[in-house]
Amino acid sequence: MIHLSHVSKSYKTSTRPALDDVSVEVDKGEFAFLIGPSGSGKSTFLRLLLREDAPEKGEISVAGSDLTKIRRSKVPGHRRRLGCVFQDFRLLTNKTVSQNVGFALEVLGRPRAVIKRVVPEVLELVGLEGKSNRLPHELSGGEQQRVAIARAFVNRPLLLLADEPTGNLDPDTSADIMLLLERINRTGTTVLMATHDNAIVDSMRRRVIELQLGKLVRDEDRGVYGVGR
Amino acid sequence: MRGGYVFSEVLTGLRRNITMTIAMILTTAISLGLLGGGILVARMTSHAQQLYGDKVQVDVYLTPEVSANDPDCRDVCLTLKDSMQNNPDIASVEYHSQEDAYNEYKERFAGQKEMLDIVRKEALSAFLRVRLKDPAKISIISEQYSGKPGVRSVSDQRELLNRVFSVLNGVRNATLAIALVQAIAALLLISNMVQIAAFTRRTETSIMRLVGASRWRTQLPFVIEAVVAGVIGAVLAVGGLIAAKVWFVDKSLSSVMATGVLPPITANDMLIVAPILIGSGIVLAAVSAYLTLRAYVRT
Image (cartoon, rainbow over all chains, first blue to last red; front, side, top):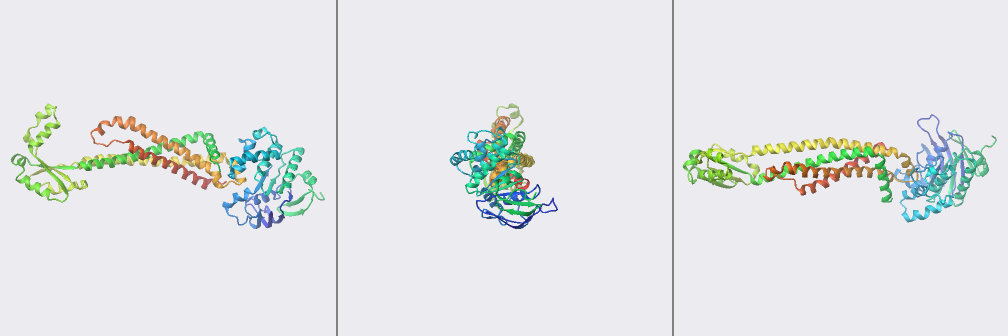
């Protein structure tokens, strides 16, 4: 599903590379954590997978697309096969819950009838039935993140990328969000979640990929956050 | 991509940015209005040229002696007339005797006793009225016949006509020049409007890109927004031209047009100009919006 080999990426504003010779393989249907302190390269990693940036060295392929060779015009098509969730939710503030979720389908040109049928199904899956006409500011943080997850999942992506999805949430709400991501993972969707929430990582006991200063320092099945720390 | 959805985005965008939108619409309207005015004047000039072209005739006046002594065109006059009839550039020649000239004069000034009193028959010249095959060659008559025996002078309407045309051409050129300057202003305003619109909606746009919207999908609303404003501007321009025709041109120039000195602006002229203006509005807006998005907006 995700294949990186010897990938390096640096930004002009920094002397140190954001990613330094990273090779990782994530299989279809896996649930993996991407951990590491701020500045370790987690966000760069996700940006490369979304093809918001291109690497300087190495090869990346995601969900069957070779991102080192992909043409600019094919990038939107690539992103449609992925879903993403962020710490700051990134909802459209002037659109209702169901419009926000429908937006992802809208962009793909799905017919109105399909949108009308699929959106309530997904809202039910994330536990937001009955809130479809609310605006984002009328919802709690956890509910907003559920909307974002619904939007990421509504077109049944092969891969769900989550960048600190629980970063703005309290522990109880975070646990609910993790349950939701697990459920999505059980439908066959590969989930890659960047986080530095050790409680979550420790309780889930899933694969852990750890970055430090842009280097891959650990890749462990059923890992915990801080070994020996 | 569904039309209704894009359209609602366009409306929101136009409303959100209302002052800039109005400025852009008005500038576009003025620019296109002037362009339309220029086109109308150009059409008027070419109509007038045709109008005069059909009527172009040259009067070759005969000397008083010939006028008095050769009333039936048999002698010097006949020589002239024959040579004109054999001239390949001349369509027809008509002899008007002193008597005819006096009758025409009386007709023209019928009812104006003082004008009739001033002129006696003997003061007028007999003349040969020449029509040309090609009105553009009007000058050959004076070149070939002035100074010939029996010829007093050759009337030349050309200078008057040229003056009228040069005034009309001047008006047209000035109008088009101002239209061009305004068009540049409109272009910059459109570009500015699109930049502001793209900036205020950058979050939305980035989210759209994230869920896999194509560049076209994210940028089309901005282009349509500019085009809608451009079309409104063009419609205002057409409205302005019609108003100017009805309340200004038709009223204050009606006497001039009735005499046939200037051809009137017809509804047909308007029908030709309106689509040109609307088309220009669309192209102007779409092209400048597209170029702005390509040059300044990275999504």
